[in-house]
Image (cartoon, rainbow, N blue to C red; front, side, top):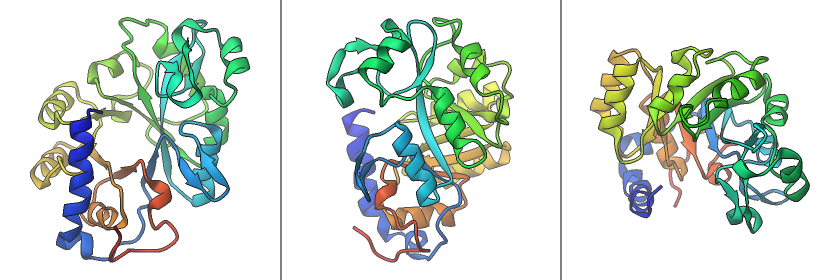
Length: 266
């Protein structure tokens, strides 16, 4: 996400704590989604995003769901990693996932899980929000390789597919459109238009940019709604109180998960 959008959402987390809905106590969301798993400084040390440890920590904390990112290796194995290469987290920018066989990737960076491993860990216990980052038109084998790994799960009940590009989801014909989530950054109006035209089941975006009018528009159209970039307990209150379906957070370890509402948190 662009730096401007990130700064805007951080500012919104600070300013919107003063809203009445943020100050009204709310039970911790049953539908809280840990963005890239529960990562950061955990009870037993630093936990890296998109790793089995991050997803296992979700289970330990009682978090309902986890968002994760899919990349295909050179030999077509779906692995869970946000970036196309391994530089940011593992100091191996030379390892480009699309150019590396799974066996080589596993030997070099064993912390990157295969989608099979995440499905096995999550099945029946953790809802998966699976972000598709490539177009099926450029990577024709992507839909069937991912769908083959999800056979043990039920769409909507156990997982959804997400994408910043709604068209990317159109290639996953084995999965009902009700399980497609179109994700907005600063382009909420455009994503909503595409969602309504394509008949996808849900929209997710910044809590600061999905206002009451947009929320009602999507509700009237029978869509589910997720809001993200929630960084503190007061904004969590606000989103739960206005009835969104899912609350996404990159800061799950800083939220008050072991209690109900918080009335003040920086």
